Length: 300
Picture 1 (spheres, rainbow, N blue to C red):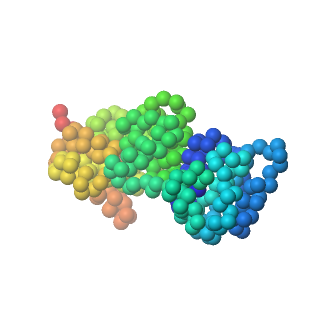
Picture 2: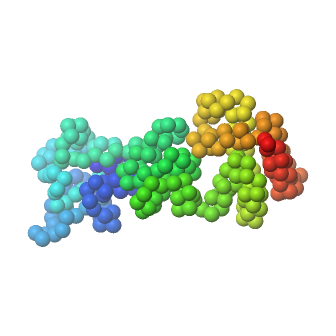
Picture 3: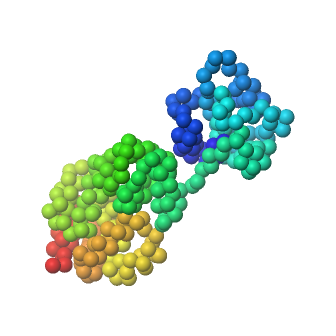
């Protein structure tokens, strides 16, 4: 049984294939009218037929499992494996599932938490299922960079090909597009107080990206930095529940720049945004000045 929201079925099928030792490419997808048809078809293989794996996606429209058909169910080594993708455990099978019967294997969706340590634990556990060992920074970066559960699972499967501990550089190189990677690098270079790298990154973004996504990213990151400088890291954590990697870099920025410098830069970024939306802005030139002013205000 693959039980969860339809968006989770692909990941649950992948988990089942790893545990049972088959390829998802070998799975046959079929539609059936009811349980009798499902079991009758699975039992109709020839004498020398290879083991088969059939996926039946039923959602909520699945009738109770007939008690008379229970003897037809076999153990995990059965020649015909039927995987039922549903949003809930079908009636009639609850007792088998709860008793841990080997006739029914359960793969239950675990929704990904949105924030905090629980989200990191979910990603770490899912990575471990795929044989991926993430460094602490890589784990935080995956959490920061990807929102959708299936997107995260897909990237973890990609990282599993490295067969070693995955670093934050590995995630940036293999999982993040060039433009997004350069935006993250630009933000990090500003936070760490690296003038030449930050200016080089800004010039690249000016050639490749629109202004508004850069403004939004700067506001999100340096708003945290200002509040970290003003109220401390723990206050920011409790007030905004930021992603760990964003908070880590924001705290570093609060150590590189004085509180007043951060306040001025945040005001400049907001002003650039407002002027552009009012049609009175001067594009990248005003943002250039804001970034240069920030870098000039680094602690010596």
